[in-house]
Length: 159
Image (cartoon, rainbow, N blue to C red; front, side, top):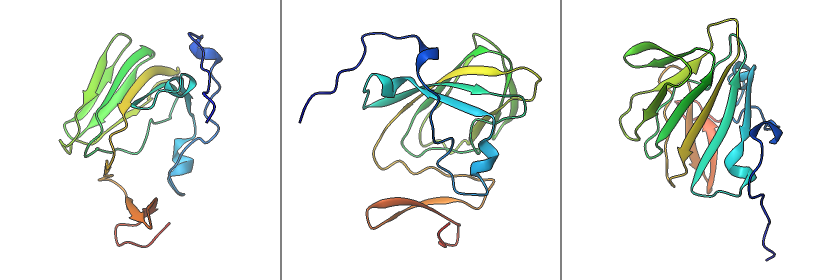
């Protein structure tokens, strides 16, 4: 197999916005409108963890509120003011602030942009096999069906 060549360095803004805006099924995918991700880790061929430069337009959210069983996540705010929503409530995050989400705690999280200006942040997450996210606020789960991960309702019906 030929080796893929990746850049030594690049300007993050030169990495194209991810074409697929969301992996969620409808009606949840459309809730991610206003979120742009630039997959910086992918640009370098990173396999063990992901790094995204994410922009949230006013009124946008990072994801459905979720928690991971095996994947640690970390965010670092570069521009704007994000509202971090966890089981403990809402916390304002401003440039230079960061937050980490340890796998297996069950503490669900998401970022929201409740301001009139864009929010720009780095998000970093590992790619631990067997991770099982949960979404406590919506009728959604991730199942393994024939070796393929698919979204389903909590009662098992596929989306």
